[in-house]
Amino acid sequence: MRYITEENTKIASRYLFISMAIIVIRQDIKYHDEGPFKIKEIYLQMLSEMEMEAVRERKQIIRTMKINQLSVLPLTKDDSFSNFLFICQGKEEKKSYFNPAIRKKVENILMELMFKSLYRLQNEGASSNV
Image (cartoon, rainbow, N blue to C red; front, side, top):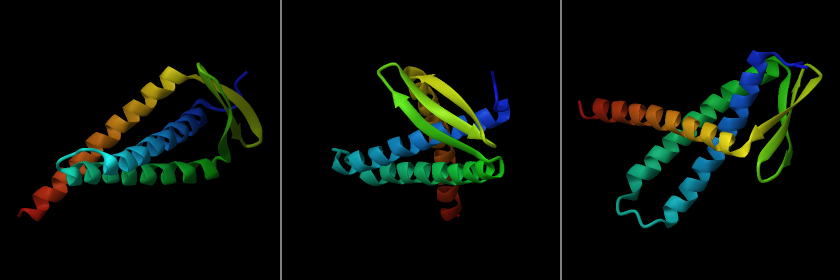
């Protein structure tokens, strides 16, 4: 039985996956510094912009979650599935995600962030060249 609305489920899921994307970006920034890149600055700038965009979005999602009295708690994780508890206005619902599906959702978010960041960086570069 569904206790949490589809809209709140989408909000909580987006929060969960964007949080995972932020972790991936931060790890990439860490590994970037140790990597053999010849021109490191452009990659670091893009990763930093992606992180800022993701953090901005997550802050907005957190505001929405507070208004809706919505929270997400990790439960268990194994080789195939990760389980989370979604709580909305005192009602609880367990969600189970197939780990490869989580990976794909996080990849899609990273791609979104990459395009937004490239667009923002390109526009900043164009306005500074004028």
